Every structure is written in structure tokens, then in C-alpha cells.
Length: 216
Ligand code: SF4
Image (cartoon, rainbow, N blue to C red; front, side, top):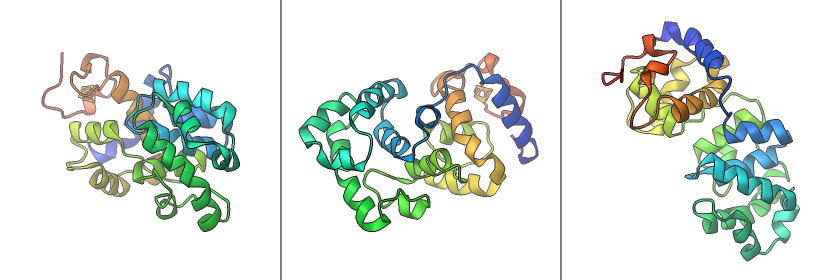
């Protein structure tokens, strides 16, 4: 894919993917409009399928609605609520540590800058970019496995890891498209440009894609 085609590609993806389920962070934002829930949902979604995380969030958000609730709940009870998300014990520890960091370092407010967000327990660049873009509607490029794989597959970039991908995409993608990047390429990756066997015949950006092993 060439840089000159980028707006057309995003437009085609937006139109062609509109009937697929939106990724979890966007679902939470639409339902709750609260950065707290987007932050918790994105921390829990690491290395876990969206369907699993969504079920846990539905249950969890009935009991945990703010940092005070997180402070009060016992860790064992929290672990039970988080099961079966991946690494639920470690994630319970992250969530238990969150209120202290938010209160002491960020004046009881969830920060919106990447450099601040990554100071929160359980938050790496991927989560930080997602919280910034989805919860605060500020520019961010969340690079997960789908974004990293597809942009390399279509030969828009040539990078070795998600961090490098994020840095290159920040230079190559116009800022007004940044916040659409994650949800469009996650939906494309989950449904069409799958990791092992992409379904290229169903792909509406096929003509822009330079992947050598396209399927028929
Ligand atoms: S044509 Fe195939 S490999 Fe290229 S983006 Fe579409 S699904 Fe992925």
C-alpha cells in the first residue's frame, strides 16, 4: 500500500467493516462514556479474547464502579471476579495498586498523556494509546498484534516489533486517521486478514495490498 492511498483505504475499511462487532474498548466507551471503565477493560483485555473480557467486564462493572471500590475490595474477591481473563491474578494486583498511584501521582484523575498513562500498573504503550484515543478522544495509535501484522503484510511498513510499528505509523499516517487505526485494523484482522489464513477474496482493500502469499 502506498501513502497516497491511505485515506481511500481507511474509507473503504470503514464502509466494509461497519457490520462487524466493534472492539471491546470502543464497546465500553459507547456504553459507559467513562475513562475509568475503558482503562480497566483495556488492562483486562491484554492477552485475552474480547468475548472473555467483555463477559468479565459486565460482571465486574456492576460491583466496581470507581477507584474507591477497587481500594475496598479484597484481592481474593477481585481475583474471583476477574477469572477467566488471562493472568487474572496479576491483573488483580495491578487493579489493586491503581487507586494509590492515581491518588498520589495524578491528583485522583486518570491522566491522558502516554508518558503518564504508562506509569499506571498494568499499562504499557498499547493500553496507554487505547485509553488516550478511546476514552479521551486524543490522538493515539494503539498497535496490537493485528495492527502490527497487517501493516507489515500489506507492505505499508517494514518493522520488527509493535513499538517500532507505532513510531513508524506516527510518521506515515496523518494524525486525523490515528484514532481509527486500531479499531479498523483489529476488525480486519479478527474477521478477514486473519493471522494464519487471510480471506483475501473477501477483502475490500485487496487491490492496495502487496502481500506475496495472498489467498484466492
Ligand atoms: S488482501 Fe489478504 S493479505 Fe492483503 S490485507 Fe486483504 S486479507 Fe490481508
